[in-house]
Length: 453
Ligand code: NDP
Ligand code: 2IT
Image (tube, rainbow, N blue to C red):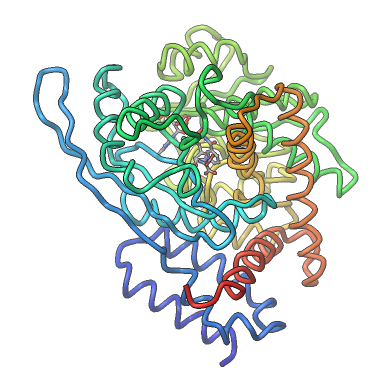
């Protein structure tokens, strides 16, 4: 059967069996379409039914999480862990706590994670999890009780050689601490079952910074391949969480000028450059809205969400050389992509997972703009998580510089793998194709080696 017919069959199957899981469908469509040149060249993947197998998670766990709020009332949320693929290593991927979390979101993230993790060159399988719990507006004690209740079910399914969760949106050092404490209490084991741990109890130096730093290393590698670099470039960044903050920090080190950030309520445009210390104080310490930034810096412009363009986002309407979408999925629309192009943007570097809509992606791939897909550009976080696992396994702790040098090398290798694969398949610089084929090939070959498991 020709590969395009098979791909359409599988996409129909996904639509039928996963109704309403739009983000999972979007992620599957992008990966499957870009595999066409590989499937046409190597018949083993269709003969062995790899596509049918790879789009179905090995296991999806959905559970009830009951916890007691500060006024003594029992609250209920849903918990998820989708263990998607373990062909090349134990399941690995973050946990997201956000009111928008549902099975479709967790499946899209878990599916992307399979190929991202394979691209790192490390032995980690793909998984994702989370809950529709909203940490915003909750007290520390409520967050702690929620994390304990969540882990009271999850601990049955994870382990340092089985499945190693980490952070994502709404899950940072505080949540990882509470989750780890509960795992240890329930199992009696002090083991590297989570990454992103505190530095006093098994965490890796530079894990907190790794996704943002890695995203910038990736952009520099990409630009260097086209005789360009980050120095002096005006960069717009969306988000103001873990990924955005450390993207901004590293951009300054490369001599670039980060001029924006955003949160779920609005966007900051600061022409002379984002003040990193103010941003960290507002977001990492005080957990405030970015409106506070504008009141401290009167030369910065704050645009609330209610003033955004009807089908776009204010942050992408600021003229820039490079855009770093680093907040959430589908935050960069077709309208935004056209405005970025008109304003002379040369590179869109995805720090978030699938921040670009399918329509915008199609447009960008036809344009002259360079495009770095998230599964390559933001893989520095999970790669450093694996470095944390290595340190835990040998009871070692490496210096910040050691970890950072390894991260730089890994990002360089990921770029080279995606770029070389694009050249191999006659689409030089199309890193969507390059990254998807390179990640898929490693996982699919391992599935073939391991038989019908
Ligand atoms: P954080 O929770 O630290 O920050 C998320 C940021 O995005 C916040 O500024 C938040 O605004 C904003 N945001 C979240 N959801 C929405 C939404 N629906 N609409 C508008 N803004 C939103 O998360 P991270 O920085 O860790 O994650 C950001 C992205 O990077 C996600 O796509 C994640 O999957 C991806 N990623 C993260 C990695 C990691 O190691 N942490 C690794 C690889 C990818 P507000 O403060 O108002 O909530
Ligand atoms: O999307 C991602 O790669 C992450 N949230 C990090 C996962 C991890 O296991 O560190």
